[in-house]
Amino acid sequence: ELNSRLDSLVTGAFLLNRILDRMMSLFSVKFKLLNTSKILHKTLAHHFPLAGDEVSEFQDSRGMLTIYGDTPMADFDVATHIELFERMLEEFIKYQDAIEDVIDYATSEKDLMTKNFLMKYLSEMNPYITTAMNLVEISKAYGVEPMAMQLFDNEMEHCLTVPNLASGD
Image 1 (cartoon, helix red, strand yellow):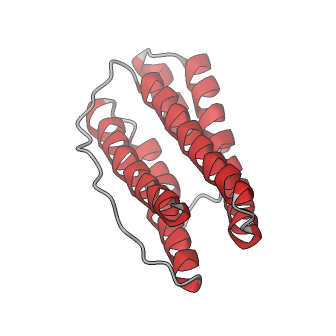
Image 2 (cartoon, rainbow, N blue to C red; image 1 turned 180 degrees about the vertical axis):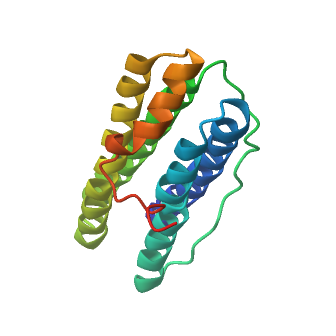
């Protein structure tokens, strides 16, 4: 039971990657937020497969097999770039809630190793949530007018509370 819950975190991380990849396509192609797409693709979308691997490696260290669940197609659309940031925040909070649920289960099973691993894993999620919150608030402040969106695109890097992994490009 605990292992299947860990599997769901692995699947959830890969689902976040798929959702974020779709968002990057929308930022770039639909909204012409090229800088935003470039930075967030490497900084956020590329993080989550690695996060899923972290859970899988923990499972391996405990002699648990990992099952990678299916992830649904990411074909959603939105009217504004702000809606993408709002969705990003919602998805990050859902994932945080899922981690907390598995922590609660590990606690009830008295599995301190898993609980401690997941507490650290949860704390690593916080800067991503903070980044998404910043992106929501700042994008709302800039608004949806084309020039304002381009100004936001130029300055959005200041919203990051995680390292900008695209800065070396």
